[in-house]
Length: 122
Image (cartoon, rainbow, N blue to C red; front, side, top):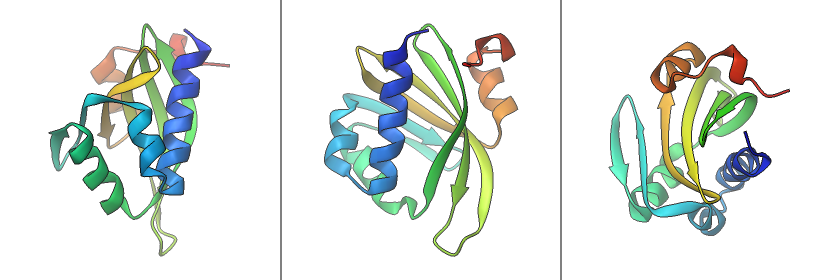
């Protein structure tokens, strides 16, 4: 585990919540892959479109890290105040997010990445 992988993912969340698309793009590789149950996209244009259409805040919770893979348990809150749990799996290479996939829950994200409770950060 490296602190820089966690810091990159937390800064990515901060930029997303602030609507700071320029910082979000700087923290992401040019060919970033993004996806969830509704589809997938690749590149900065897809990331920009996804971030601008999100319309919610994403609060990071527990973080799991191993060998460039970061899974973050998340609380997603809509502008109306409705919230739900989810988790996102990130791949971080050289302080850039190269992929992010949103899962319905933490168990699914951990299973998809093969991370375990042993990878939970303190």
